[in-house]
Image (tube, rainbow, N blue to C red; front, side):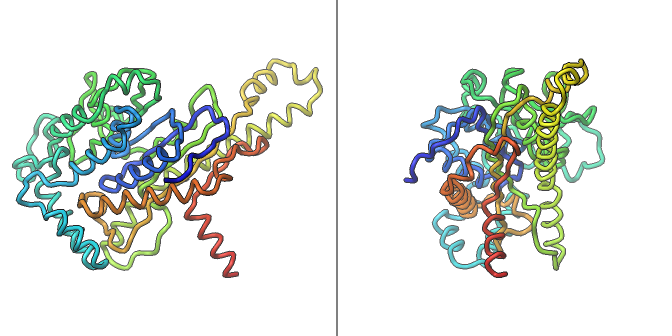
Length: 394
């Protein structure tokens, strides 16, 4: 068991979870590593599968969170029809053979998900492909039904705890009528299963979810990361963020159509994180620069109303540290990786997340409070290792 980690006095310690379907088991592994290190999270934000992981974490007492996460993932990584499941021991033994065997299992599990859905998550809507051009009520315009997901969340999550525990929780979704991105936030409203389901209602697979007379789809249609919601919190606070992404912006040029589709998804769903991080870094640098310039002004100039207003807006000395963990594709993770819910691959993704966060936490300088003259830093353990290797090769 790794040692407990000592942190600087951050006011907000956040876990931010991106969308990515079956890859979300990686996030569960990261959370396990944070919990074993004694990281005192007080902020959770998620989108899509990240929202579902958020519900399970926030909806349980600390000593039950890992157990409930495992129950959630062990459930949804099984088919609806038992006869379609491979014996778990056989699946694991095949997975352990080589990458070719893992690819075969991935194809099998992805095809099974398309045909049969996943237990406690979604199931095919009978006749949906045949009646694609017929007009139906919005709640029926999808390829799959998600009734079972509501029951799963109600069984595994205490929504009174989500709303009353003091843990700040938000999940993102898109309003279908106006296209606006919204956050359902337990500091502003009472959250129920429907809010987390709405965040994960990715069309055309899943139907929209109705909340207070409005229909919502998966937040990943607009932004696949809720990082901005955490960084833009007001009043500003010294903040440590563990941002867990499931799609990598970096990758090789594709050489076949399957790789084209895979790379397209990686770029589409990952780039928002880098945009948000860079935008906020520049904003913080500008804020600190303006503050230093104001200090150099004569008092009679600085006291003018317009300069006083500026000073009020930039006078914060709050600092932000974003620890960026990114799921890295393996040779067997093909273009269907986000919907191949195999038990063996799920467990491997979980282990990968656990190993990555343990490796990250070994270096205490990554958790240090940023220099006040900078105010914002990011760390990516994989990129740091890559840069170090390239430096040695030079």
